[in-house]
Picture 1 (tube, rainbow, N blue to C red):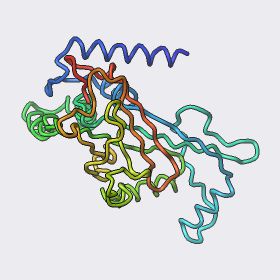
Picture 2: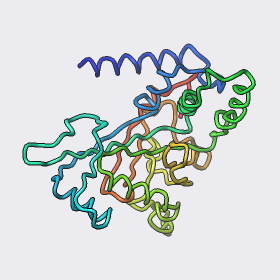
Picture 3: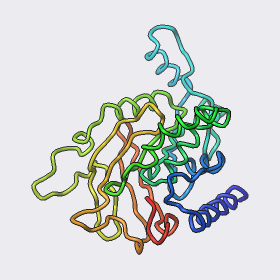
Picture 4: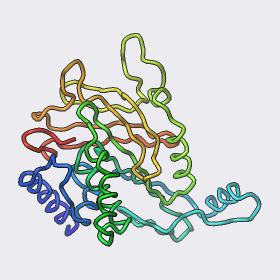
Length: 272
């Protein structure tokens, strides 16, 4: 209950912060705690977790396949968990978790949060003024990128199932716009069931415009959708929500993510 209450209070704080500050200002400096919260759980970042059970012997066999004939080896990382207990049961069973984080990457607060975490890792606060200026010059194009024509959603997976983690990562790196769409667009213009898409409250399914594999900076795979279709915005300020559906390659997981529009508002417009 305390975690729930603190989460609600933080979202209320973020909403008030947006209302009181220039939320479309690329120069806005976040605190490290604020940046981490925006990236982990905020109006722009949503998590969903799938759970499964397996047995330790089965994991040992999988490890042996991965490592040749070195013998049984544990392939489960220590739990970094979300939700339920990730430990082993009395019969050697193990609870596996698969946590996906989907972020509105095109939203300025998310990009500001990434820059702040990059600053922390680079020890920005200890840099000389000249070094800070050089750092700022490098990240400025990222903060000032024109996202007026696209809505970009980033997808990351965290799991204690190393085999699945590696397979999903491999499949996302090998994926292309065409493979994610499932096939060429049908003559009727319908979006294939397996393709990722946004669900607009007033336009329905919105198909994928572009795709970028997971990047080396750790910001995940990028699903790119049009911000407008035939001049009509995909998301309106009067809409209640916008959703993402995505069957993750290399898994049987179907993501169903919901962003509440009222939580994303900035100067009367949804910030996404």
